[in-house]
Length: 130
Image: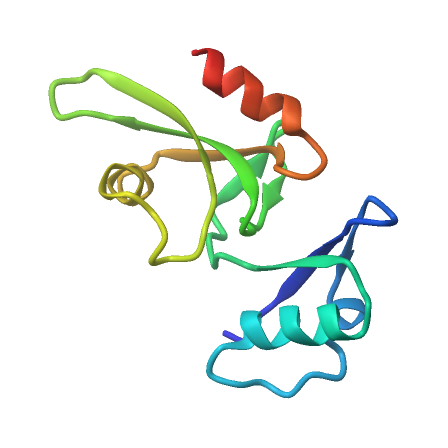
């Protein structure tokens, strides 16, 4: 799977995708660092995020969605005893999850994307209250 990127343009306060983010960067071993360095050197103020590869996500209205770093998601699964659990997490790079978050994602029966950390900060406040 070819890596896909999006970026939060801090000055414009909007998400940008694909070539607008990294059209002229060659792929390196640490592409995120290379992109952030390039964007900062060129006086862009863009926070770069990569697709997580989670393709089994849905939006709140049931449409299929791809998971991106920085997305706020509700993850739900059933335990062996029949008890159902749900937690709100922020999607991250594969090595950045806690053990519990990784376990939740592995056993997820659903992953619903509620928004992202840049455009929907109120969702973070709601999860901190619970």
